[in-house]
Amino acid sequence: MRAAVYHAPHDLRVEDVPDPTPADPRDVVVATHAASMCGSDLYLYQGELPGLAAPGATILGHEIVGEVVAVGPAVSRFRVGDRVTFPFSVSCGTCRTCRMGLTGHCETSNRAIYGFGGLAGSHAEYVRVPLADGHLRHVPAGVDDETAVTASCNLPAALIAVDSAEIAGDDAVALVGAGPTGLLALQLVMRRTRRPVLVLDRVGHRLALAATLGGVPVDVDSDPVREVVADATDGLGVDVVVEFAGRGDAFDLAVSILRPGGVLAGGGVYRVETAHPTDLGMLFATDLQLRLNGLANVLPHMDAAMDAVAAGEVDPSVVFSHRVSLDGLPAAAEAFSRRAEGFHKMLIEP
Ligand SMILES: [Zn+2]
Ligand SMILES: [Zn+2]
Image (tube, rainbow, N blue to C red; front, side, top):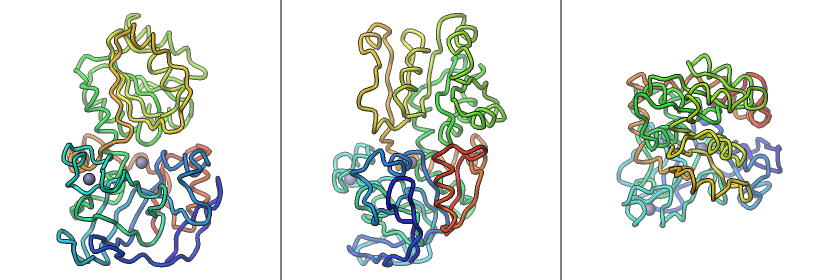
């Protein structure tokens, strides 16, 4: 089959690799109809997690909609021809953490994530799905490809973070990080508060799209952030920050604009942030409530995410700015990494 193989930071190459087969009786093989690239894939693509990307071997990608083409003998819930998607992480459904709903922490799969470490991802014509009965999901015929692909990660991750914030109708809310997942979260937040939602980012075309969706854009590099927040909250600070940047400076910014007792609902991935300077004493002194959802347990929320689209609460298609074939993926990945003008998210159709 054809697959985009990681060779070095900023170097994906589309190559012929062996077709996956059901190597274990519990495996399914899925033909990829559409996939995408998540912001968290950029940690690998940009070389920030070298231990999780093997040059010449790793196939990235944990978002997918596809069709079952092979089924291991121990699989009971799937047949050849089923239209499916999977959550970004592999879960068994029966271990202690899975039974708690903490599917991103599955003990059986050892927190395996598609496209990270040794498990091949969806930037390929076919993908092997281990422990398929535990986490593979059917996709109803009426669900479009963009919705099904975002159900793997971005959309339930946005829903989990926004739900965890417990936003009240008169809350002042700021969204930090207007990448694709942040822009999905923005749409959900705007359904839950009557007040204007501040959107903080430093990428102009992301802020422009946020404004189109009804958010109030705030450029963290050129706008007076503290004054804007003070004006919007009578000097108190916002009640809630939903954070989807996943970087230490963004986390610090989120902490700095919250009112005492405010809620920081984090959806960002802080995987590479080992030494950012958030002041623990300040967290203590302001009674902030941290609700981190970075290693999101998306499986139990995939259906609710697709239901939110059906109900018109959120439209994933607005974040898909580009459609590419597998051959177009290396250039699109670089544009995504560089935050190229007008580039938000790509639908990859192998
Ligand atoms: Zn993701
Ligand atoms: Zn498990």
